[in-house]
Image (cartoon, rainbow, N blue to C red; front, side, top):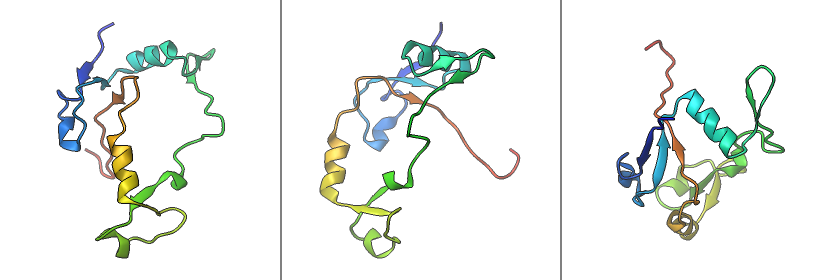
Length: 117
């Protein structure tokens, strides 16, 4: 199977501070994604060929997973609360320095628009 396999360097992710040169699966076809899902036991194919995943209690992105570094200029311009939760520069630096997991990330070039393109 021909995969769209590349590296963080080739994708230019260094501009975002991701410079480790690790393998990345980029813009995979549906069939390639399905093969990866099956290979990594992410779910199962059901009778009609659809791939089903049991997310358990995690049904989507939680607003409570959003943190913003509370420092100038954000500290006086963000509506702080249960959704926009503050964190410190030290916590951000520690997370930013943490190496990525051992599995290769999947990326895709996507766009969304309110008007026909």
